[in-house]
Amino acid sequence: MLINFLKFKKGEKKNMSNEIPKSEKSPEMEKVLNDMTEQCFGRSRTGKQCVTCGSEAVKAEDFKDDLSRKEFSISMMCQCCQDNMFS
Ligand SMILES: [Zn+2]
Image (cartoon, rainbow, N blue to C red; front, top):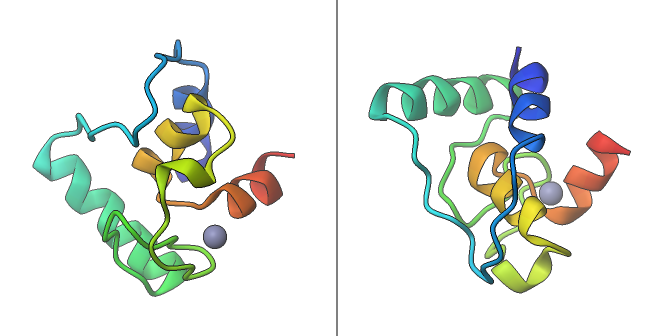
């Protein structure tokens, strides 16, 4: 379910900013996602830490493009983990 959701979001048009975009999800959606990542990875979504590998202080510069930054705002996965999951 999470994967389908992510694939759907990946098809979205990208906007050219150099920041990790703010999440536009409702608090309910955030809670659902947070519960899911805690169950799957044992980590909560702090917005700075990769939920998959636990890499801390993930920064906007760490991502190769805006799509990846947007992906992080949704999935909280660092560039490395995104590459592993989507390639
Ligand atoms: Zn990671």
